[in-house]
Image 1 (tube, one colour):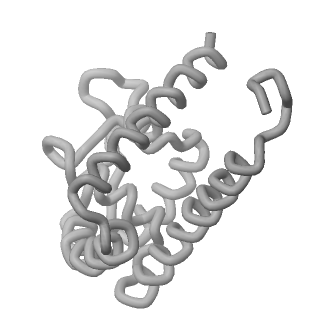
Image 2 (cartoon, helix red, strand yellow):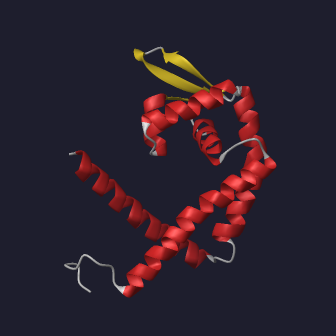
Image 3 (cartoon, one colour):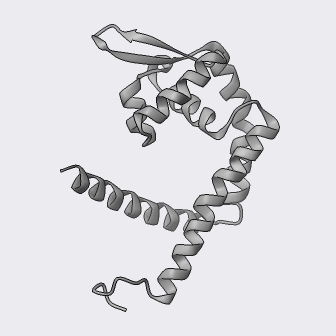
Length: 159
């Protein structure tokens, strides 16, 4: 089939279905592991990791939503749940009275440190297990290409 047809060819369809199986199944597995080993959801862990990797363990809420590719309302609800558990706290932004910072608490830091080894182990087994360096390099190139295409499409939709 050519680019002019609205349908995927058989090979593209197989790869697309495989992609969906992996991208839908992996978060379910990661969430189950976190639930079994910690009191965190995958969404909790994603927020905590993102904050843990920033200077001062804090980010503006808008920047965090952008970095995570989440809608602001989704992040706001997530942060409310995490605030109630003492994992993060929201603060007024000192440089901008309208903005808010979200900061990783000591309890949140302890949670991400405790959860990281089990999470990393599962990712290593499921995603990277059995891949040699050439496979890993190819996967990195493919994912970079897809990410670049996503950025272009997002920019086109926003303009």
